[in-house]
Length: 175
Image (cartoon, rainbow, N blue to C red; front, top):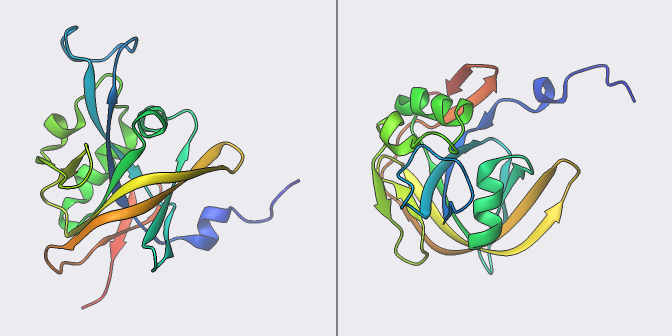
């Protein structure tokens, strides 16, 4: 089937988030010491949505070929980090770089801090975050929607958030 328009052109801009996850790196070639078996990763995600208020549920969509897909599938948890526009370079870096060979926390300059309710890192510079436990996975073709029950959430500060318009371009909300 041939589409007359690129779907991304129609649905963008979409708020970009950074999803953090932790998992077992055994059997994976990574840029860490061989003795390291646990790896923390960050993935940029534009496909995400609230799903329910009661109970609080949030959905993220990850490609099956992504390293974070494996980490989230195995660990059963993830953190959603809502990033301010001032961190657009880090958001772009985390979306263009694989966590298999790169420590994205170290290379992006983002600060890792531990979640309160799940075994997962979150990003200190985020404006807000959600700590989620996976309750379901839905295959949607080449991607999977992870449905997470929100176990903890905090709005840290109000800042203009980042929205992806396509390619390497971003925008933000108006004053």
